[in-house]
Image (cartoon, rainbow, N blue to C red; front, top):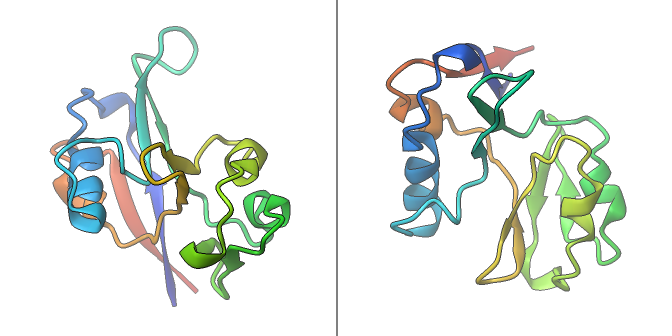
Length: 135
């Protein structure tokens, strides 16, 4: 079984960025939101006050297909894993993601693929994000 992060209650998001802080701190030891593998943005209009961009763990990810160096390796359960030493920092992967879910580390100039661990969901005070099991 694999797990996938989903946005379950977007309308409950208060924009506290706890999910982004938790991800960034857990995986990159950063005290900011800049290294999170998901993004919360303020939008008005159709989507409401906040928009969340999370990886959907695509079976055939556009980000991996766009990488000229093969640095994003498609995982058996979907989604990708970064082989950092192969990344040439071109950013083609981020531009290829039609959902704008793949984040970019401006400091290291590498993509930040989500590993669907659920850390962000555990720190969300309003259960906006959930980690679900898939067969």
